[in-house]
Length: 273
Figure 1 (spheres, rainbow, N blue to C red):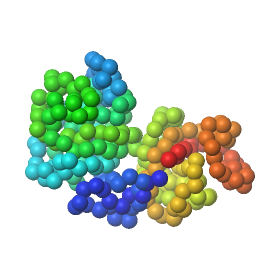
Figure 2 (spheres, rainbow, N blue to C red; figure 1 turned 180 degrees about the vertical axis):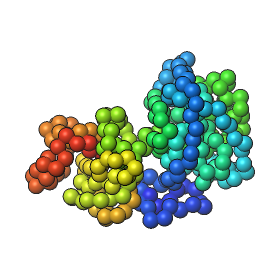
Figure 3 (cartoon, rainbow, N blue to C red; figure 1 turned 60 degrees about the vertical axis):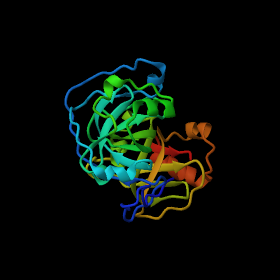
Figure 4 (cartoon, rainbow, N blue to C red; figure 1 turned 90 degrees about the vertical axis):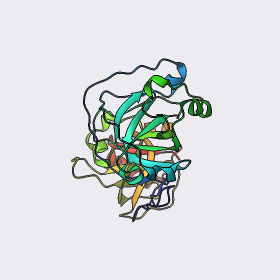
């Protein structure tokens, strides 16, 4: 579990926040226009594929502020803007990059599908670099094609080593079937604490859902009610027999009965690290 307190950059600290990963949480606006489908051309691209149904056509100019970030690893929570190539897209984070759109290159080694709506943020962790196609292909064993990146030469980019959907707790409980089985990173305020491995994150009233149950497979430092935390895991329905089959759970019989009675078949985020 991550406790949000700061990011790897030196000028912005998140107030009153504790997180697993050092990260900045910002929610810039973004625009979407028409559907577009992009198919990777090579096995390397397929391993790092990024796809989504909606795109737009905005590119902003680089500012000098990003010079301070070059070579640093950052974690941001933001909304995607535009597909660029089979393995890349743009985002906008005003706190770190002013108003410019920043290219994100998927170097996780796994395909990633962007959300099809503009209200689901992503959590992105990676190194900030100046775009040099040959150098990035060499350093990360990628196969980026020059046809997609003519506008980005020497521009700042984030080479992502981690990508995850980051919806709000209330959205997950209001529409869990859309997220079951997916790797998610969720940020919220601790609400009800049942034990060192089980607690809830407060739902966002805008989504009309219930509080989201968080279940760790291993004991964690005890959280405090009202703390802002960030956790990563897989969303599943709470079916006791299936969870006990798939995970080495450390709960006692009282906690097992309590959760089964209150949250049976409801969504639970299973955190394994």
